[in-house]
Length: 481
Image (cartoon, rainbow, N blue to C red; front, side, top):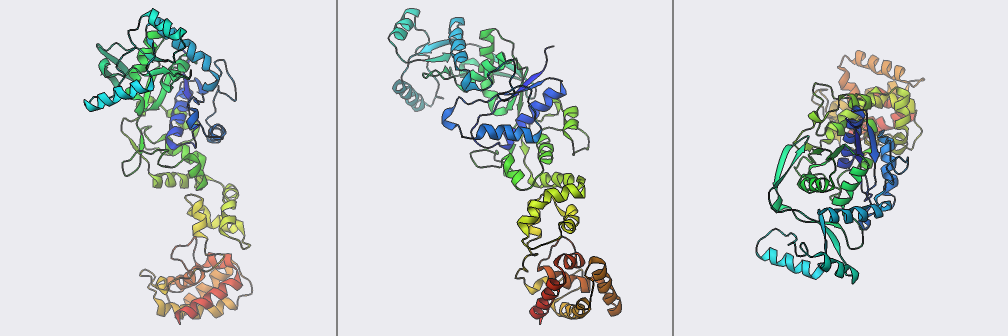
C-alpha cells in the first residue's frame, strides 16, 4: 500500500473559519495516524476573492495549532509548486491532454448564447445545464475556430447514458444518473482552471491518497471520478464530513460572519482546547474520554468515528473544555496567560499573584476575567436589592446592622491581610452569635456591588486594600440608611 498522503487546501479568502480548521485537523490526524505525510496547498485561482494577508494567516494558524505540514509553499517538497497560481501551465497541458483522451472538448459558446440557453431552460422548468452545443464539432471546425483566434473554454465531456458510482468512506456507495451531470468548464477562456479541475490534477500529481472535505462536494464527486477515469488515474479515498451547524440548525458560514479561530483566541480560549473541541465536532473516539492531547487524538483518530450527521457547535461545551485546560495550568502558567486580561480589567495596582489564585479555578475563558473583575477599579452603582439573599437570610435592614458592626472592627485592624480580615470577621460573627452569611454577604455586596464575585468578602477586602474597603463599606451603610 502506498504511503498515506492528505492535503489541506484552503483558499486565501479571509480568516480561518472553524469548518476549515476542522478539515485541516482531520486530514492531519488521519495521515499522522497512518504514518503518512501532510501537505499544505494554497488554492488561489479565484483571484477576485483573494484577501491580502490571508496566506500568512493560514501559516500562522497552522503553526499555532500544531498542524505541522510536511510539504507546502513555505517548507518545499518534491511535488511543488504548492500554490495553484504558480501551476498555471500544468492545468492547460492536462486540459488539452484530456481533450485528446476524449474526456473533454473545446466550447466556443459566447456569454450571450449561454444566457439565452439558461433563460429557455428556466422557462421550461429545467435545471440549467450546458446543452452540448459544441460537443460534436469536427476536428476541422475546431481547428478553424482556434486558428481564427476565437475565445474558448474546455468543458468536461460526460456520456449522458448510464450511471456513475463512487465510494465514500463515511457515506458509503453513492450512484448518480449521468444525465443529471453538467458538463462544467474545466479551463476558462483566460486560461485559468476551475476549482473542480485544478484540485483533481493537483491531488493526482501530489499523490494524495485520502481527500477529506465537506459533504457539499458529494454532488461534484462523480464528475471528479470521471476525470480520474478519463486520465486512467487511481481514485483517492474520499472522506466527506457533514457540516457544522448552529443550534438554530443553520450552517456555520464565513459569509454570515460565523466564528473564526481568531475570534475564539481573542476571547481567551486556549488553542489546545479549541483543537480538542473541534476534533469532537463530528467525530467520536468511543468511550467516555473528552479531553485529549494532540498525540492522543492522533492515536485514537479513525474514519470509522466520523459521523454522517451535522455537528452542532455548542460554545458552552467549548468553554467547559477550555476550563478543564485552564485548571491543568500551574499557577505560574495561569498568571502569565491571565496577565494581559488582568491589565485590561484593572488599572489600579493589584497583586497579580493574589488575583491568579483567586481566578484560576473560576475562569472558563480568559475574557471572563474582565467581566468578573470590573468592580476593582470602581464600585459599580448597584441596587440595594442585592442585599436580599434567601440562603444567607439577609435583607437591606439586617445588612445595614451587619455593615455597621463590621466597620469599626475592620477600621481597628493594624495589619491588613486575608488571615487578619478572616479572624476579625469571624470573631465578630461568634460575638454576635449569628450565621456567617449574615455578616459576610453584606460585606461582599458592599465591597463589590455584584452578586457574583471571584471570591468572598475576605478575599475581596484583601485585594482592595484597607482604605478602599473601608470607604466602600461606608458607602454601603450610606446607601442602606
